[in-house]
Image 1 (cartoon, rainbow, N blue to C red):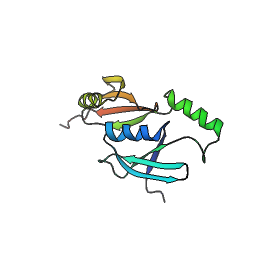
Image 2 (cartoon, helix red, strand yellow):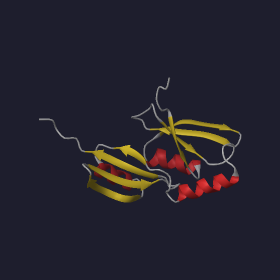
Image 3 (cartoon, rainbow, N blue to C red):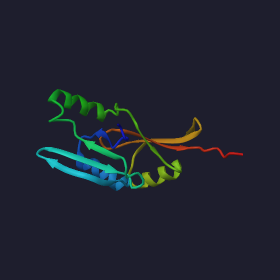
Length: 139
C-alpha cells in the first residue's frame, strides 16, 4: 500500500552549485549525500517539512544515455521542466528576503486568483513559484 511521497527529483546541471543554492539561499538542509562510483544521490529537505526530500539529480549514466542526457540538460537550462511550488506565509516578505540573499526572480509578487505569487529559477533553470494563499475568515 502506498504511504506517500518521499522524494521528488529535479534535474540539475551541477550538483554542488545546486546544493549551495538550496542550502545557502533557500534554507534547505542536506538529507542525503551518497556516492556510488560516479553516481551521486543528493537530497535536501526543508526544515519545516522533513517528511519530503527534494532530489538534486544529474541527468546521465546509469539512467540515461548521452543523447538523452544532452536533451535533458537543454530542457532544464531553458526552464522547460514543470514548475515546482513552494508555499509561503507572506510572498512579498519572502521575495524581499530571498532577493537580498541573491535569489534572482523572474516574476515579482503579483496578486491574482485569490493569492499572491512570485517566480524564480534555480541555477540549473528549474522554475519555482512561491504562493501565498489568501485565507478568508469565516463569519
